Structure formats: structure tokens, C-alpha cells
Amino acid sequence: MADSDDYAPDDKPLRRGWTTGACATAAAKSALAALQGGSFEDPVTISLPGGQTPAFSLAHEVRGDGYAEAGIIKDAGDDPDVTHGALIMARVALGEVGAGVTFHAGAGVGKVTRPGLPIPPGEPAINPVPRQMIRAALSDGDYQVTISVRDGAALAEKTWNPRLGIVGGLSILGTTGIVIPYSCAAWIASIQRGVDVARAMGLEHVVGSTGDLSEKAAMARLGLPLEAYLDMGDFVGGLLKYLKRHPVERVTIAGGFAKLVKLAQGAMDLHSARGSVDFAVLAGLLPEELRERTLGANTANEVLGFGGPAVATKIAMLARDRAQTIVGEATRVDVLVVDRSGTIVGESG
Image 1 (cartoon, rainbow, N blue to C red):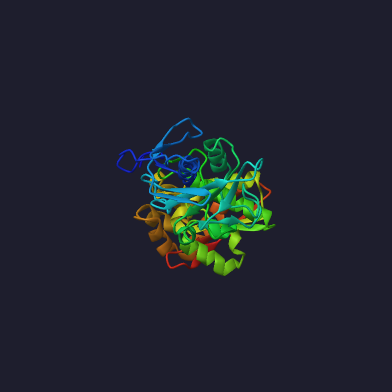
Image 2 (image 1 turned 90 degrees about the horizontal axis):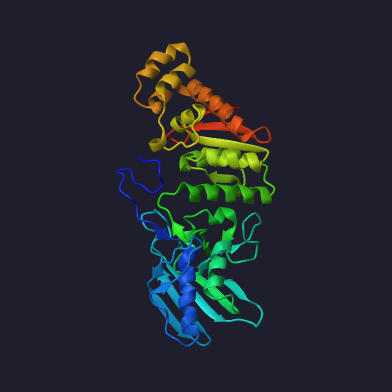
């Protein structure tokens, strides 16, 4: 697979899409035109922070007593985004003179309930850059802007929002207005926000897991608050490097054997397409009686099968040592190795 986030495994360029923030901005601008007595702007063109000027077609328009509302279907391009195809709506009404643009959460948009996020508790989950974009589109007038997302509450259950303390729906996100397909940046940003929330809550122990099985195993073992569990995925480097700058007392890394072998070998991105287990290196890490068999193995999990808990524990300790060098001394690291049945088969202690 190509290293670039812009290419699929067959090197075919992937189509970029638009963030919820860009869609909300376009909807608000179109609604303002109708509120001011004209027709809804359709297609509606906005300016993004990077200077791009995309146009959006309307999928929804309503005029009411003192307000106008427009909606746009989000196109996330080729990114596997849960909000792809969602209807993003903006209702614009006149506000109090001198109040500027005020933001409100409609149906399907969450509210922030915990500290540690870019928006303070009590505010609708509309991030700073989308707010800036909407203000600019409305020429910083005095308007009440209510953002809604059709089926947003159900979609939010598939996101990090419940763990981050955002209740009732989705967040309106985006720093550039553009969705880059399969972007690592968005996932790493979610990991970082999870750390921020955990620290703001005073949690001293967080868990980075590579997947659902390892997370559930860690939950059963550790019994920490939900906010302590970070869906790290393959981005162990993103988590560890952020913790070096924003430490907590302890971090547990939980993952499958093959991924933790990669960490033990020094990989910071554990995705199968961005690095593989080096069986020669793995053999050198193991007892002499297992080395020849390891060199002939087809998969890391085959090595786990004949090496058992002793091998899993050895890898856990090596992975811990490698992670500790990245995160620094302020945060203590431990590692749990989880097999394909969800059982913890090795740990660093």
C-alpha cells in the first residue's frame, strides 16, 4: 500500500470529501440568503481556511416565522466516515443586537459535558474552526445558528463522542473543511482528545487498545472508567508521543500478538500494510529451541501457538520496554497480549 493517505492499495487516487463543518457552513450561508428575503443560494459556494471555494447543492430548505433552514447531504468522498450521507442542517434566525453569531445544538448534534475538549462544557459540540467558518459566511452579524444532523444521535454511538462526554449527537468537526480519505490524522486527533478528557477528569491510568477484543479484555482485567479506554487502533506512536507531552501516571497497551511483536521491533504504526513482522528478528528475541521453528513460521500467531504464554510474556516485556523509551519516564507503561479468543496470554507485569 502506498504511504500517502491519498491513495488506495491499488494506487488509484481516492476522492476527497467535505467535513461536517464545511457542510454546516454552506447550509448556514444559504439559509441566510433566504432569511434576508432572497432565494436559497443553490448551489452555495463557501471559502475554506485553505482558500478553496467548493460549491454545495441543497437537499433541504424550509422558511419559517423568523428563520430559514437549509440542509446539505455530507459527501465524505472515499473515506469510511460514519457521517457520509448524513443530512447536515443549519437554521438561521435573527439574534439580539450586538450578540454576534450564537450557536445552538439541534436534533442530532451533541453537547459537551466534560472538560478537556476544544469547546467548554455546556456548549454545543461545534468545534472552533467550523464556528469561525460560519461566522465568516454570515459576515459576523447578529444571528442565532442552530445546527442539526438527521439521525445524528444514532450515528454518534458509532463514534468516540460517548467516551468524550459529548451527549445527544455528533460533533461538527473539521479544521480544513476537507476530508482526506483514510487519513491517519483524524484518528490520531481522536486519540489526543481522549487523553485530554482523561487528564481533565483526573484519571491517572489510560488504556490504548488495538481493537475491540483487546479493549474488552483490558476492561475485564482493569475495571477502569469508560473514559480511560482509548481506541488506539494501529497508532501506538501517536498515543505514546502525545503522552510524552501530556503525561498520565500509567498507560496500558493492549493488543494482539502480531501487532505487539511489531511494537517490540520498534514499529510505531502497527498496520499490516505499513510493516510486517520480521521473523528473523522475532526468532532472535526467543529462546534458542524456538528459533528455527520461528524462522519457518507463516504468521506471528503460528509462533504464539507453539510458543504459548512464555513467548507472549517475552513479547509483552519487550514491547513495554520499547514503548517506555518513546513515552519517557513520566508515564509508566505496561502491556497486555491478547489472543484471537480475547484471552490475555501474556503481560509485562
